[in-house]
Length: 414
Image: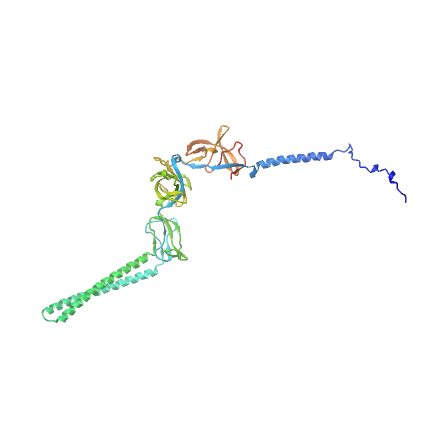
């Protein structure tokens, strides 16, 4: 084997040549520039995407208020209160007797007169008692007639005995017996007359029991609810299991009033017969004239309010019990505007700003705002009238910032 002399071996041929031939292009440098350009384009696209998106972190926080319909009378109002329409004459009508409901003649919405029959419970038992008492009365009357006939006969006999005794034709014993018979006949007549009176009273009692099976309207009113159906047991107590206490709920619509809670700190502003304007939440465009009918002379300790009743001076069939209402208590010598004066759209003054010489508001729709040019009217009770450019119920931005514009994403302040 030939040995190798390590000391004379040339290792220079094993070195790596790190120099780059000038004839090859620098491909890695171009790749870096391409990656940087892609990153810049992605950043620009992401900026525009997120600036136009609806994400909450990019949306401006705002406060909004609702454009509402306001009547001109509000400028003369000394106080505003909310309440509900309540019927002052309202009853849950039931039967005095207990039994199964046999007939029901009414449904919801029916208008009834006082005394009208609403329904009837089964009455076979009380009608049988009435028939029996009528028969007993006939027997008592027959006994009375018999007693009268007996009395007449006793009187004739007593008179005859007296005449004969005076002539000495009869004994004193016969006269005494005749007089005793007369007294018994008189007593029998009195007893028969009393029996007739008892029989008549029994008839009256049975008639009342029969009448109690009829359910009648206690006053003129409208049926609000039907609480029972034919076949159900009706009881005046209403506490028995499986029974009904009331057949219908009846209300006198002419007694409708608005009951409103007024803060006890403001009660001194109100007085009896003070003029009011009533607006129902269901029909905000319609206003009703009213007046304070009664201020209840006690306060609610829990709410620190005083109950005030406002009567309608005029109303129509749209006014229904339990509707929510708003009441404007007017100043002295003020009255509700005539019906031909329509309510006006109003908003808070802080929602209106000037831009390019025009009055504008920002309307919130689907988490974005839309700029709208409006025409301003008069001041109504601290609110601005909007003649055009806005509809009732629209949500407008309060105190809009200078950077707010149409299309800006917004979110409500918490």
